[in-house]
Length: 85
Image (cartoon, rainbow, N blue to C red; front, top):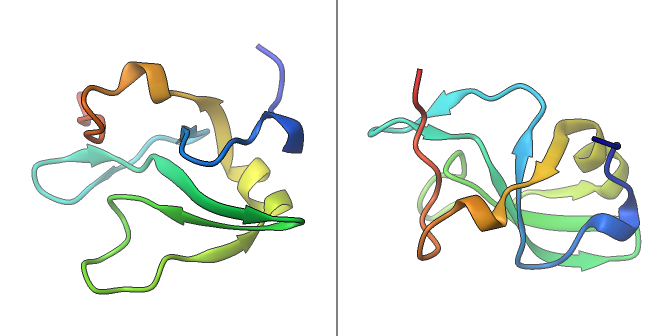
């Protein structure tokens, strides 16, 4: 599998971390969904973003260092993936 590039990132798609960690209860994976992208910045939603909090704004470069692959097709009905040991 090749490393993701800026051209691979698409708004609305969900990406997994290189290092998968559980978060929340019930345990969910720390995946991220891009909700906005402009130039070299993007905002994402994730189970790690608390209710009522602002969506994090980070650089595309930082996101690419974190991201492993697009996992949108592995999700069901827009729900986050569950953490399974």
